[in-house]
Amino acid sequence: MKILTSQQIRYVDAETIKREAISSLELMKRASTAFYNWFIEKYSNKSTSVLIFSGVGNNGGDGLFIARLLHKSGYSVKVCIVEYKNQYSEDCAHNFRRAKAENISIIKIYNEDQIPDICKYDVVIDGIFGTGLSRDVTGIAESVIGKINESGAKVISIDVPSGLFLERKTTFAVKATETVTFQIPKLALFLPENNLFTGNVTIIDIGLNEQAISESDSNIYFTEKSEISKLIKPLNLFAHKGTVGHALIVGGSLGKCGSVCLASRAALKTGCGLVTAYMPKCGVQVIQINFPEAMAIEDRGERYISNIDFEIKPDAIGIGVGMGQNEETKKALHDFLINNKVPLVIDADGINILSSNHNWIELLKPDTILTPHPGELSRLVGGWSDDYDKIQKTRLFAQKYNLIIVVKGAYTLIIDSENIYMNSTGTPALATAGSGDVLTGIITSLLAQGYNPIDSAKVGVYIHGMTADFTTKSINPRSFVASDIIENIGNAYNNLEKIR
Image (cartoon, rainbow, N blue to C red; front, side, top):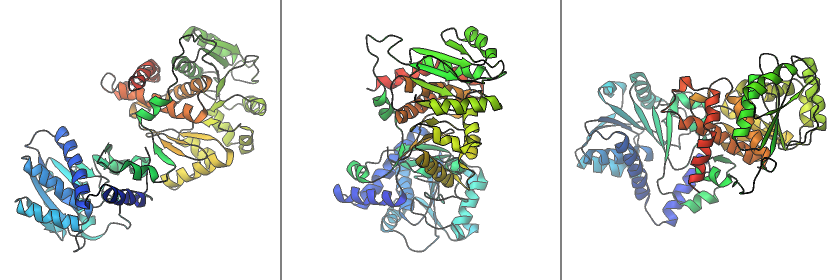
């Protein structure tokens, strides 16, 4: 699913009206009805009192149309029109006239004294500004948004929280509990810095013209279940352990050998036929007791890796988990990178070592996958001023070295030299020790099974997130641990293969 800019969204809206021979008012009706259907499913009790803040543009028109639909269905609705200017859009003016004729309670707000007591209402719907906002919020709109945010009320924003910029940093906007956005994902809704404003985000279909969307150029995508499902390779009836990939996991040091155990288990659970762990001597007994399905190769170092040397021929390698940054380990990694020709995933201390030895990055083969958390990313690409700057710096880094960077976090980003893919699965349950080690094992396994690197990253991140989605009711997110990810990988596969 493409993520588009505000200008592209306006184009798609206009083309939908043109190509489907409908009025702008009809498109507004589609959007408002879709929001209404979502709302009544979530708030089916018609005694729910609703306060709607509408602007004077088309987002305000949506708010007024939604007010009409809710009023007609028996909800208690009050509308406040925020008069930040005295010129209404044509469709907003139409819905204002219709709402008045239908005896909906409406007040116009020119100054702060006219703002009602927000706390008296069960739900607030925010429809002041939409995606076209291009300047900082001031005047009465600023006062209203401030009052909404101070109220602590449950707030649902129509399309985007009022005040949120789509293409640059936002410092002041409605702090929505939920945002119900119209069909096209907006990058700003999924950035960490904007979570304070967006709350939970739901995408609803409003019948925009699919051809117009497909014609809009974008290199930013929101990954969907249907897309990932199509990427899953079928399992051949005559497959055996020697035909579905051999993954090598390199890492571990004294006190950190569990990370290799987690990555190795995840690799095997994700479907490769063979997994070998390469560890310092202190880790071999640990993994063979903890995970007997794995084979193990002992490094000559007792407490840390000092010389990465093996005779096996793996199909993919994951390196860095729990590895530490001993000087001998750094040299071992350098020597390994000089000679490596195998598809590679680098995580944790592997990334940290590269960050302090930038000239070694040129040793990486094209499409090597790096999986940094935010701290590791900042050491790798440098600090950033905001999320947009972070994305830009990561894109330039990926382009310079022809790498794939998996920026871990909520809505994990997968950035290669051409595109950005935003993951749609996962919950805060994944913020747990070992979660990244498991992801390394999953992606390495997919590489070993013959997935190309970008698909390995996309599928791996999606499956990793799905395991948390599945367990929201059975495991409290606070109690979720990395082993729970591994145990639910099979459930993720079952779910993805159902929709083929």
